[in-house]
Length: 84
Image 1: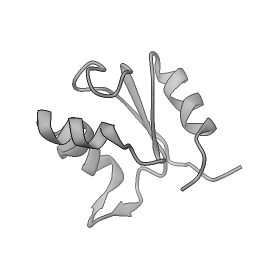
Image 2: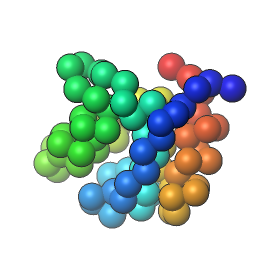
Image 3: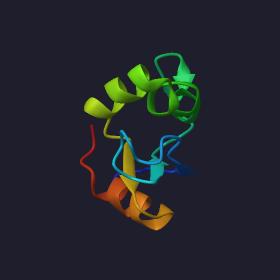
């Protein structure tokens, strides 16, 4: 099993309009991607960016993020995603 900790779980800022889920689970949330921590990247842009950014992000989401209707579902879906 791949290492995912720390996992950050947060509500989708768009209520699932782009992600198709109410909750997001971010694996290895403290890992730096493109100059920013994954969690910061999601909260300040990408998944929670403006409409254009969010649409682009969710059209081909990275393997380190998953969605679900509950926080538990989001984490379970993250664990089931293949590693990048």
